Image 1 (cartoon, rainbow, N blue to C red):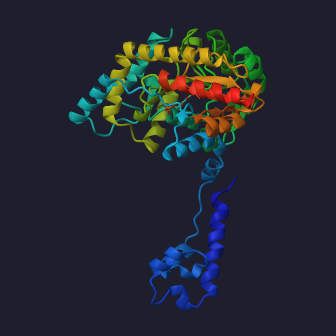
Image 2: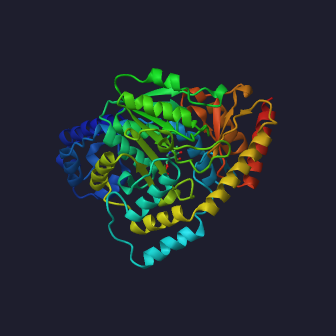
Image 3: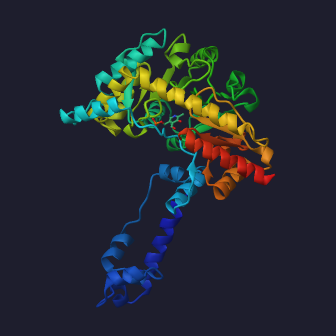
Amino acid sequence: MTTSAPRNTASRVHLSQGFMGDSLSANLGVGKDNTTQGARRPRSGAIIGLSTRRFLSMFSPRYARITDRLAAEDSDVWEVHERALALQRDGVDVILLSVGDPDFRTPEPIVDNAVSHLRVGRTHYSPSLGEIKLRRAVADLETQTSPHPCSTDEVSIFPGATAAIHAALTCLMEPGDEIVIPEPMYVGYTPIMQALDARVRSVPLDASRGFQLDIEALKATVSEATRVVFINTPGNPTGSIIPRGDIRELADWCLRRNIWLVCDEVYSMFCYEGKHFSARASADVLDNIVMIDGLSKSHAMSGWRIGWVVAPPELTQRLGFYAGATLFGSPQFIQDASAFALENDQEYVQRMRDEYRLRRDFVLHRLRKVETLTCSRPHAGMFIMCDVSGTGMDGRQFAHRLLEEQGVSVIPGEAFGPSTRDYVRLGLAQNRAVLKRACKRIRDFCEDLG
Ligand SMILES: Cc1ncc(COP(=O)(O)O)c(C=O)c1O
């Protein structure tokens, strides 16, 4: 899709026509107030002042194709959410269940820690790979949760998991290379793949099996052109956890085919049933293993922008070159506070995890009474997938009508992939009082239909 290119061509034609066809005085707007005329635009190029005209007519902007690819991203994904925000701005009482941003405040000790580091002048450049203190805290965490000791040479820090994923894939793939990903998948992966010009081959997850990954189906999707297999456990939006044995098998299978296994684990600290095993903890050999994690969810620090990659030392070194070229380090005081957060997180991560679990059970208990809805029970994460086909609608129709008729905003399942087009995703980043009102509205909506 080329939203910008045709627009540019059109404006070029329009301007040059005006320049050649109009009288000079009209072009110059001699004796007239160009500003006022400019404000009356834009039926003819003649009303644009000369200096502006010359500047524009001599410059024919060209853009990198990446901008077209990104502009082509399916804006429908956020359509319901955007509409919900617009309604809220107009004063309508809307409950947002469409966000994945934790409603909790960042725990106070982390905030205090950041402020104290600000006050002692930790406000300078920092190494491209990240502050050693934070890299060590991540390495220690990985060492504790896996049989493989992890060194700081394997850790690189980025401003959020999104940047970490983008950097890792940039260092692993050429444009046009193939990446295999299970779907439904996190909506944020699509723009990253588009930025990289990656060819995405998706593997549908089977809803009837709790959205568990079918390893054989994934293997069958891999081709000679596949450079990376990308998994997400625990998964957004499904909340399913890939068992350790499956990750181990996949890691080994990929290793033998010279394929990287990249694993996004940003929900690793929010498991309710079953245990999360990281790709490092599961794999026997780490040569092809790349792990992504961050603090946005686990520590309610989405706005602080801290994520990381754990990868073999050579890839880490290359990530350092890439980070040096594109980021030149993340803020020192944020990294200091992030190291503190990782080293002192037992109590508050546990508290948030317990609260999300309560919210999950609370919502499931209420919505399972609605006959036309079938809600999956996520084992992890902060979302519930709900099959709405019993209402006679697909996820998109349901989401639009629910918003307009009851003021509850959810994400249509097709945003995550074709296999969940009959679903909507409900977020748990609201307190239980709000969730109670939201469930009541959803129930009323479904009952009114029927
Ligand atoms: C699965 C998954 N990965 C990555 C991210 C992005 O995390 P960050 O805020 O660290 O960029 C999200 C955010 O919702 C996510 O759900």
